[in-house]
Amino acid sequence: MPFWINLTVSIASMIIAAVSGIGLVPYLHRLKFGQPIKTEDGPKWHEKKQGTPTMGGIMFIFSTTAAAVIGYCLFRWKCGIDVTDKENSRAALTVLSCLVFSILFAVLGFVDDFIKVSKKHNDGLTAMQKIILQLLFAGAFLGSLYLLGDKSTVIDLAFVKFDLGIFYYPLMFAVIVYLTNAVNLTDGVDGLCGSVTFVAMLVFTVGCAILKFTELSLFTMAVAGGCLGFLLWNFNPAKCFMGDTGSMFLGASVTAVGIVLHKHVFLILVAMVYILEALSVVIQVSYFKYTAKKHFKATGEKGVGKRIFKMTPIHHHFEMSNFSEYKIVITFSLFGLLMGILGIITLI
Image (cartoon, rainbow, N blue to C red; front, side, top):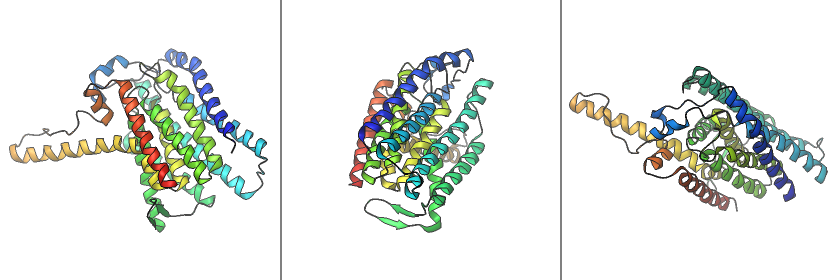
C-alpha cells in the first residue's frame, strides 16, 4: 500500500468530519438535541455542559465511510487490484464487515441518544436491551468472519498461543461487549475518547502494515482522520459531544480491528486505556458493595460503603484531583501511545 493513499484517506476523513460539523452542529442546536447531564455521572461542574448538542459522532461515521470508499478506489486504481481474485475480495469484504459492524453499533447508540434527548433525561435504552442487541451484532460479525474464511480459534498472546476451540467464540462475545462499552465509558471528558481512539487507530495502522493487512489500514486511517476532524468540535470547551452514536461506533471499530488482526495481546495493549476505564468502575462498585455489606453486618446500617476512587470512570477521579480536561486528554493519550508502542513490539 503506497503511504500516500493512507495519508489521503486520513486527510479526506478529517476534512469531511470537520466541514460536516459546520452544518451539523447548528442543526442539532435547532432540533434541541442537547445532552442531558446528571451530576451523579460526573463532577458537579459538568452541569454547565447541559444542553451541548450530542450525536456529533455522525461526523466521523460519515467521514470514515466516505474516506474508506475513496481510499479503496484509489488502492484498486493504483495497484491494479483484481476484485475477482478470491483473496482480494475476501480482504475487501472483511473491511466491509468491520464497517457494517461499527455502523450497527452506531445505530444502537443513536437510538439510545434519541431516547435521551427526546425525553430530556440521561436514561436511554435499558442495560439489558443494549446487551441483547450487542450480542446479536457480535454474532453477525463473528459469523461473517467465519464465512469469509477466518476460522482460527487460536488465542495469540505473543509468546504464548493456545487453541480454545469452540470456546473461542463465547470469549470473543465477551470481549466485544466489554470493549465497546469500555470505549463508551471513556467518553466523559471533552476530547478524551476521540483523542485516545485517534492514537489507537494510528497504532493499529502500524500493526496492519507489519501483519500485511493492507486494506484494513484504509479503515483504521479513515477512523483516525475522522476522530481528528471531530476533535475540532469536541476539544474543551466542546461545541458538540459524540454521544453514544459516536462512542459505540468507535468501540465497535476498535474491537473489530483487534479481532480481525488475531493478535490478542496487541489488542489488549492498544485498548488498555479503555480497559482500565471500565475496570475502575467494576472495582469501585464491587468494593463499595463489599464494604457496605460488611458495614451492615456490623452495625445494621444500610447503604454505607467505602470507595477506592473519588469518582469513576477513572478520568473523573483525575478531574476530582484537580487535573484539567486538557491534562487528562494529554495524559491518557500519551499512556495509550506508550501501550501501543509496547503492542507493536510484540508484533516484531
